[in-house]
Length: 387
Image (tube, one colour):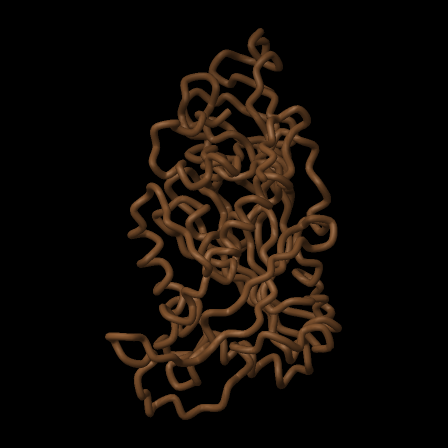
């Protein structure tokens, strides 16, 4: 088991009362790498503080603990010495493990009659390939069905296609997720990002109303009211006269309309923004032509992998060529890099400790409470009931 959260860690102060763990919720499926990254050689990955080796043999995908239980050498430095057997051999003494069970099949340097064979095992992990991503289940519970744990349109290739990328953040996963539940930072931080700088100011000072999604999969945060400009005593107006905002709104600032939009009929997205367990945000567009999933994957207590899973509705081969070209030539760097990197700089610079939360943090508080109360955990594991 991963080490317990440090009671003296100031980063635990905002989360301790909500029982949201530092290493992440273990009993969920997580994307860990893109399928194309796993080639012929085994690959080392890290998830919820666990070091894991991935390899593929005869078309079968396998995930085991990275550390050989013999002398501790990394199995990712080994190889599939017996192709087709679904095994991996440690590079140090040739201890060879069955990928499906983790059992030691043979200790090659001790001969075929070694008594240690079949008495030793390393941990194996449920692993899947889906929608161009490799998914891992790091927990101890019986894994759920993958498609029940993720937005259902991911990988429905006859109707949609997706392009995924990720960036590693030097921060705890909770800091990244706290960035998503409509905390008003976008109206300030991203207002001058390339994709928004020519559009009207997004409304701020909104009223937020968090509500659980069906089945307690997550939260929807309804937005209403707000303003796009105001005078501040002793300072002046915000925003100032910004003549360059000449474009018409593209729908990013809309706070209503999803109940009857194509985002609902095509994707099943009922809200402009939804936050799901174990830590992903689902963002739709009123047109129903596109959706974005951002997933905070806890590598360990200090590193988070932020996946951007971009999804498009198939609308003919010509439109698909356009959508793919538009992503690689424009959106991939304007949003997935430049826009997201504005968050990355600020989140990585966060100084943990006591917080003074306010009206804009209604969604953050609701998410922490919801996650600590409703996250999937092994039977008998303590859950806090937060008033």
